[in-house]
Length: 489
Image 1 (cartoon, rainbow, N blue to C red):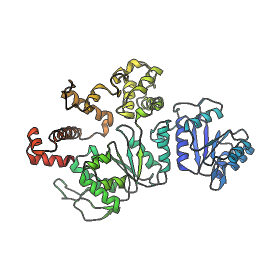
Image 2: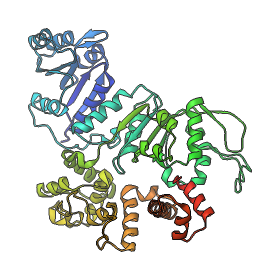
Image 3: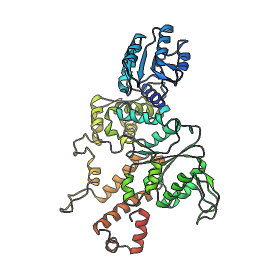
Image 4: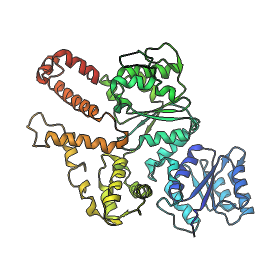
């Protein structure tokens, strides 16, 4: 006998509130239907549909208190939770007089509402996604923590907007998932969504990738090529790691944002850029602006709606929910029964620093689903991720050693070999990106190593390029060109 989740009907004219409630209650295992007015919800509930109602009080076309009164006349057994931004004594008394199960003022604690719904339905609230609940409807963005609820609320507020968004967050936090969710709930949802990682494209090809080129525009341009701006017409273009965009491409992008038009490289035809831009970065862009690597005017054009994605270490309470979700996803993919962590293992996971964030957790669960011999996974299987005792920052020793700057007054303690450092750098790329998304890894790693080397030598010589060229064994012209390419001017 199949189990059907209870259905919650939500009425609120605020799209962000609807989105937050729908996301949290769906993640808790309920089916959710939302309405922006009382009339439509009443039409759904009157025939007997829905197991519980959550309603705002003040909405266009009808009052939530009148809706409550009507529902209690037609379906006296139906629990109704009233929420309002206008929390007055009169509203509170009116709600309870009409038979409300509970009355809450905005802003409310989403976890409390989920628990309240469980109590109202005389059942314990599930704490993990259930079979048959389409979590992918929210793009796999999972979390009941306060930080994630604020993120959901912001995405909801952007639902009817086409404003430019700048997403900031560490690598692996799910910035692309957030961008996809914004697109999926936007007026452009029926158009294409194109994700471009600036760090994964050779610098000399970025402009061609974005804007296209005409035949003969440069050596190797044997035919006309349309860029992503043209191919994403009427959709959303997601520019990930925008801080790695070369300066020339930044200038072109700024013109597009200012004028809404662009030309292909080597072309004269003016083309309308009918796309919405969502950008993302893990870098400190104001610092990049101060060092001359990023245009200040472009930053302000992109940063119309700033949105921050929290790190996994800042929301450990979401880890059990994420684990359940990833185990279920991998189980479906490889067709083996899902596994689960013991409470002791969960405690280890919650104390770990997660430098690779949610993507690192997902990769860990993918490995354990294949390699762990038993369905129940204890802390003994997690010794390789560390238990939080290696150092004060709870960071794995190798990565920790790579991020510490040696003292100028003393010789650095013996550290990892060069080979270990390179291996750690490569491993971080595989922890940050899915293997299928990685291209030009050789060029990316070499560029990162060169940038770190040149920056360190220039710091040692206080910017004196003659001395820096001598230390590096390069001529000054080569050094100058490389510094320009790397944005180290």
